[in-house]
Every structure is written in C-alpha cells, then in structure tokens.
Amino acid sequence: FFAGPLVEAVGPFSAGTDPALLPVNGHPVSVAICYEVVYPALVRQFVIRGSELLTTITNDAWFGATSAPHQHFAQASMRAIEEGRYLVRSANTGISGIVDPYGRVVAKSDIFQSAVLVGDVRFLRVTTYYARHGDIVAYASVLATVAVLVLSRRRVQ
Image (cartoon, rainbow, N blue to C red; front, side, top):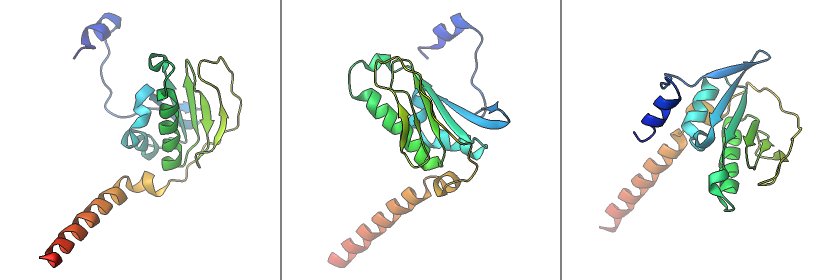
C-alpha cells in the first residue's frame, strides 16, 4: 500500500505468479531478493521448481552497525542447509558469502568491507527431506505435543 506510489513512479511493475529461475550455463538458479531469503517456504518453492543454486542479493545498509546483518547472513545460511544447495549471497555493505549445503561458510566478507569473493560452488539436483516435504515434521511435532498434553491431562484427572 505505501510502496504503490513509489513503484508507479519507477515503472509499470506487477507481481509475478510464480517464483522465477534464471538460467546460468544451462542450470536453473534462484535469486531471493533481500528479506525473501528468511522465508523457508519461498526458497523451497525455488528448489521444487528446479533451482540448482541459491543466490540472494541484499541491501543491509539500513541495519547499520548492529547484529542484524549477522543474523540475516545466518538466516540465509539456514536455507542452504534446508535445501541442500550452495548459497551465494551478495550484500552491498557486507556480509557477502558462499555457504555450502552443510552450512559451512566457504568464503565471507566482513561488514562494511569492499571485497571480491572467490570460491567454488556446484549446481546440485538432489533434494533434501525438507525440500520434498516442507514443514510436515514441524506440524507433526506440534500435533504430537498437543496429543501428549491432552492425554497426560486426562490421566491426571
């Protein structure tokens, strides 16, 4: 609602219907913009559609010298683990980096540091349990917890 006038001033933009992938040397690559990377369901949709490499671009300047850029990097790293993909992150004020599918940081720049990162990444097609089934384990855990609480309460009475 508040961005409408700004977007209209820039050009005729409209929301897409599906997450889009970009071909890179014949491999589908996803691009999460800024805070999109903190939403596991969105990144999962990229992988379901065939993304072999996760990338994200962000402007973390508005965080300033706080812990937020580090938290944002950590959240992005979680997507690499969940989806079993390399993640390449480019931030205009840092923290940029490359994270492998196990969450290990292959390369990383410091905050507010100009840098060029070099590292190897692989295009991957294998899917993780999370990529295939999403939050089913979390939902099942909540249901199991509720069931245990209800049953234990009945036994007490």
